[in-house]
Amino acid sequence: MQPTIYNPPQFIEELTFRVRPDMLETYIELDARLWVPALRSRKGFLGSEVWVGEPGSGEVTMLYFWERYEDFAGLDVAWLEELKQKTNDVMGDAIEFIGAMESARKWRVREYS
Image 1 (tube, helix red, strand yellow):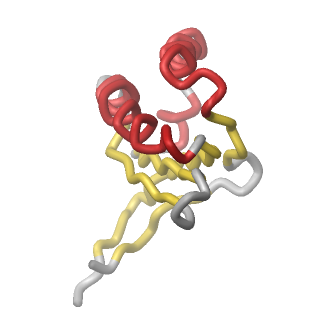
Image 2 (cartoon, rainbow, N blue to C red):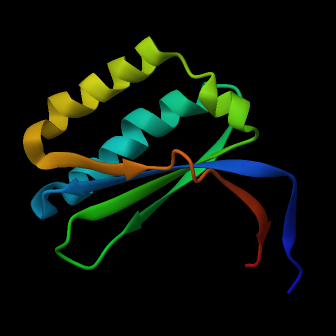
């Protein structure tokens, strides 16, 4: 198996939420319909992955891949707030932000598949 080597490395934005279990699929579909298309319009966005915790936990982690950290860091704050508001309009109190990478930035350097 030959690895895919990312040179330069890809920056990974990692966001973790707790979603009411009965709304988990709604949130995942909302990410696909709202966030991913919007992010595709931004410089440097490469794609995303969705990871979930144990069944019934409601824990979900979104991984967004960027060509460079600067592409991610340069996102317009007002634009992001608008997307967050649209998310809140659908999800209400069924979602809680748990955490994000701040000091522990991560970059994808190699992949085996």
